[in-house]
Length: 276
Image (cartoon, rainbow, N blue to C red; front, side, top):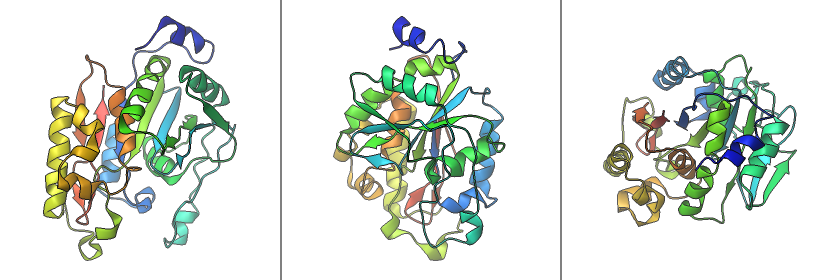
């Protein structure tokens, strides 16, 4: 719930705005940062529908920490946290500013959870590889909030709810991961085949999408209890948990839409969510 105290605490940082959308972006391969494909087109089409944000708070699968941290530097570095890709990908820089003020306010809003102000991380590819398609001029400040790997899905869902006040201050909150994400089973021979998934991946996507569209989030919060197909789709939680941050910010008056809703290389999905 957004409280008056929450809104007052950040009144000096950003002006009041209409309620911002919330996103979950299936980020897929880092190569999406420099390739032209249907998913990149989907991100750009999405950007045309978004109000101009004052700042972005991103929860990326690639900042998985013990405890909760938020980036608080003035100029976050572009982190190339991958290997084996062309030099052109390592050459990409996304020089968005940070927002120490938003980091401090995020820490306050999440109290009594202990949040560390981090000066070392930056923007990992879960953040910059997709945000660059939304805001190619890097003209919107970006901070990242880490995912505490010691906590449950319920914890992350409830933590996200505490961020609701930021939506009324022009902050675009983005979860970045992949719902179906089993790298050990990727079919590289069919990587370019459109909407190609193993039977279990098709079942997992259908299961999750049905819950999303029905607004029935509790089974998604308790994802470890879902069917075997979902267990194969989520062998480790880091790419899935950003979805729960997005869902935690949906209120009863919001609508939920899916886009880029396709499978890739057998064992991955690009399914993305817009809440508005």
